[in-house]
Image (cartoon, rainbow over all chains, first blue to last red; front, side, top):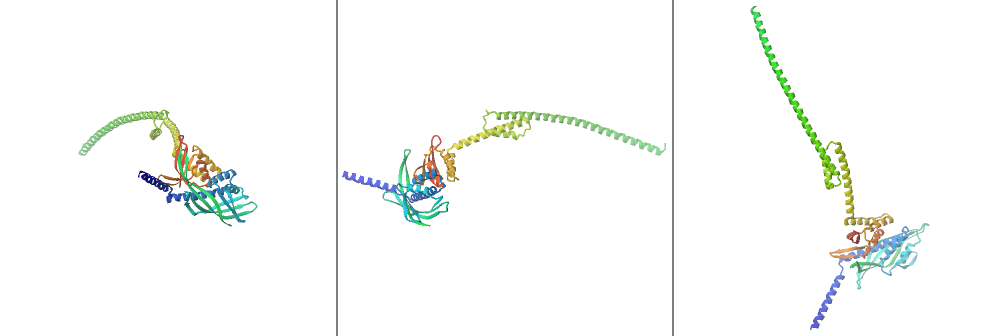
Amino acid sequence: MKSLYKILFVILLSSSIQVNLFAQDEVSPERKQAIDSLALEKVKDLGKYISIIGNKDTEFSEANRVIERALELFADGSQMGVSSLSRPDVKYYGVREYFERLMALNYDRVTIQWFNIQYISDLERQPDGKYVGVITIYQRFQGESDDGLKYMDTTKKDITIYVERKETQIGGRIIGFWDVLLGDIRVTETTT
Amino acid sequence: MNKYQIKNLKNMSFQHTRTKSFLNVSNFLLMALIVMVSLAGVGCKSQKKLAKEKEKQEAEAKAARIEKVKQELNALLDDNNSMSLSEKERALQRIKDMNLDDVEVKALIRQVENKLADERAALEKENDRVSADSPDAKIQRLGNYFNAVANASSTSAANNSIQEALSLFTSPDALVLIIISKSGSTKDYDRPTTIQKYLNYLKDQRKNINAIDNVVFDTNGKIKELELIKK
């Protein structure tokens, strides 16, 4: 009889812990909205970084510093799709290589603008606790050379977003935060 | 002597009598006038004397007042005067309101004015220094730096503001936490960053979207931790 009580106690205890854990994982709509906004902001930040890196007026040291900052936005191993109106296929580069190639583009003036940035797939909680969503952007690229050569296109790109609840220890205390990481950026459409 | 001559003689005698009594009255009036004028002269003389006396007293009182004012002004010039600056300024104003027409007093007033102006300037400078060192002043300066960096006209201008802002911190690696949502005691943060990275973020993104929520200072008055919140 005693052992039966013990078993019942353990079952009750474990179920109560599970309820607590579940409650901790629950995110209120207000908090979820804040996380959505945070991820959207990170994508906008990337657009600005790409514009700075591509801009020929940006000093080399500044461009390199910005590349490092832009890389911090990405999950390891993420790739960036690059398309051109002159070829049908899309090439994929690791993000570092992409930024370095962008910085070295053979134009005298480069303008890159991102617009219509929005979710096409809301952040959804996965079984592993991470949130995954997709944000789409439109990129307007314009490259000009002094000899009159000019190239421009508009590319629609889908960016996979990962959001994960993490903890870090700073100065002896634990700080919980939402880590937003960008995954692969896939080209879905290229037009003039 | 006929009747007519007698009558004339009588008339003449009567007229003589009338003239005589008239002269008597005139003499009396003249005498009275002389007496009155004499008396008035005596009165005037004593009035003048009184006025002179009063004038003398006033001059003495004025001299005493001037002497007292000089002492007060010299006391205001004394470096060991224990009065507060405001008390000194009020005392000087009271003396100036007397409008004393004395060269020495006027010269002393000018000296005191200069001295108090110097003291006021020094006090204000000290107040500015103290208030500039206060936590509130530092927080305000930091907010101004954030705006300056985000709205800088050039990269070098932004970098200058970044360097100035960094002087408020214990180190460029001072912790910066950004609250993305707050509900009661529950705070959701963005990934922790450092002040140097955050300032560069403002420079690159050219937007200042976070407000200062909390600042932690070390014992030297430097910022060691900063908490920002989405505006």
